[in-house]
Length: 87
Image (cartoon, rainbow, N blue to C red; front, side, top):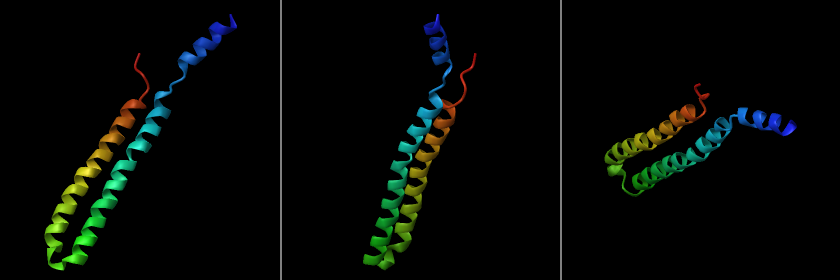
């Protein structure tokens, strides 16, 4: 009888929220590294060729937005995964 109670208690635990949090934390590492690489390349390119700053900044902002969209998609998926199950 006690094993039945333990099985029911284990069935009520929602692991999705914790796993989704860990998944989003790991998924946010990629965009963080990507943003750092983007701006490091802009700084290096501007230091080597200062007259190319304008085009480099346009490319940098465009790629920055694309990388950050990936992080926002991960955030939305976190909230979807951690939502309580519907009955």
